[in-house]
Image (cartoon, rainbow, N blue to C red):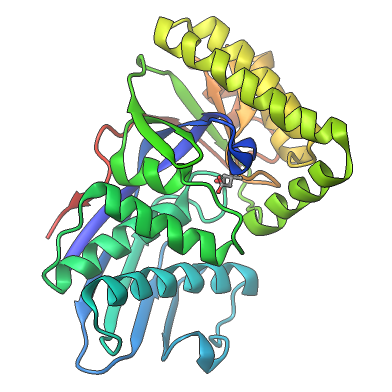
Length: 328
Ligand code: MEV
């Protein structure tokens, strides 16, 4: 058996715009998905997951062509989760040059599913790493990130950037612009997360922005403005100016809101953080529901969020210096 873990992430800036070649800066956080993989004697794939913020499910199936798994949890979440695992295993079959190898895969994750903290990227990165090692292959981090990206790209109908998967594979703070992915230095960031208990469908949200951008010049300008903001944010990050960073996060949230990817509960949590004195707050990831990230060195934001109607969980997030970890 091989076991790997990979971290989730928050976006300091740049989600959505990164899909159109603008830069983005995500940071890996110490919330992880842990994937155990054991080779089977047949070619089937069995996936067990108890902790993806949905009721536990166990599915055995021969691949996507065998129809939808029969489970009593929201269908889009299951299909997405299964699609990511299936795609990850296909990457490993390709790299190993064996079509008919089967696996038992067990997933444990403390990253809520579809909530903007990079749960799918973490599962895909850890699954590819563990399954490849189960077949005796150690992938370089860059190849791991690339294969994980190809998986997300396929599952999200060709609408994924390299940001989530690169960040999860390498850890730390990263800068992604098109195919150019690199690690960058970041000061200690007092990150606070608020989670509304919900999830957004990344594919649908990305498609919505794509349509807006194609239809209206001002929506395309909004996407370009996010790119400008990220370029300024990179300098601010290098200088370690947390106040200026917070202002840019607030602005970034406004632009994402204009693109229609915020929600009432995300806005409520953002405003609760700002009212509590956070230096800045924004939604993180695809949006539609899920998480916000705020910058606050004091306890005030966490306390305020814990009393905010619609906020189900709040916690401080530490930067994950290490990306994928090989545990067994
Ligand atoms: C989702 O976590 C981030 C998006 O920018 C999509 C992507 O980059 O693939 C919305």
